[in-house]
Image (cartoon, rainbow over all chains, first blue to last red):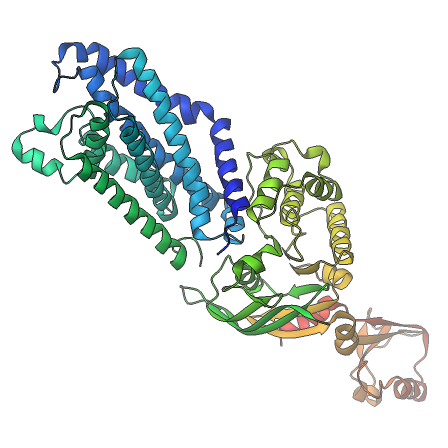
Length: 255
Length: 306
């Protein structure tokens, strides 16, 4: 089957242009807020916290903070990217174009994931100004960065299609994703929790992402890195299948 | 003439139970201008939305250029341009960017010359770098047309293209449609303005309650279904139609100064000669007479109220 590469490029460029048009909101804001975390938890409070598994607290939270930003920005960017055309009605053009669901997804999710990787990279560079960071497994780090970006962009894409109002668009990130992220080991190792809470934490999928990502930096992990990769891929596949079902069934897109 | 669009047995019922289309059969010929008339809620937009792929095809078959719209959706959608009734448009984009976006979306490689020509034809060239949010409603409608033409479609659907636009813009739109037709583009449009169909269309279709109730060449429709009226301006006004003339179904107008006779142009005998003879016999004199033919609008109203 032929691929409408021009359409994928058109959507991708359109979305990337939107990011650069709103550079303060898209890039500066998440980088600034993450930098504030470094200042507060890394420099101010972190100096009074002992090392965790031989890593200074300031450096320990870097992978978690990058993941935190990537997850929230991925969901926010991709959900808005597909919700806004639905809201304004401009989605008609995509629905009437000679383009498959896979190509639509490739354009929107590809652009949103690119933004997330850019933001994650900028935060990584910024973190180096505050703390000393070692990356023991750069390839695995990039793998987690890309897989997490794509997975959460897909999740955001699903959210944007599901949402039929602005409230629904924000309710999932605020009430579900944010608590899971904060309780997923961004600021601590789950081994620091009581045993019962450690077991409960393992039900949180974000734990696996942050643990695996942190392993790529310091070889410190709450769970096996292979389990982390497996969970990330499983989440990615579930999201892909859901997007496929949405387009095949026309859910919330076609009458 | 060879049909470019074939619709067979098309039915559509929305989730809420609304039956929007009922077993619609319709063929649109290559290169023609086809006007689809119908009152609000008749099913015009649903019909177009199914052909363009915006609404799922529930029952029936639709083919464009002999390609099935579901199985060969890439082929069919590539050759269709669509201008919706509303004004859904990327308000923060420039005119130039949004047109190029549309071209890419429909699988065409960038072609600045073509997009420039489209914008010039629609008097949008001097607005190409402006954000769409700064344009007037009429200009936004032009941008929507430019977007639909950016990928060089061979069949163009215009859903009420001149709704809410001023007279000057409406005439510009008519010119655009005529020019496109001359270039070989098939144009299908819906409209509330019967005058528009009367002026532009080669053929007219009338849809009501989801059913196509008539498809006819415009001139033939008007001659076949058009009724004519003969108005006689009387020398002396009448209080009532004399009983001797009851067989003609005459009406008095203009406070009894005019006598109006309605006749069917399809009939073998219009009855005019007989009427004039009867008038002479009854001593009714007239100063002048005139005939008028019913417009497409009157035909349309007559059809949808049958």
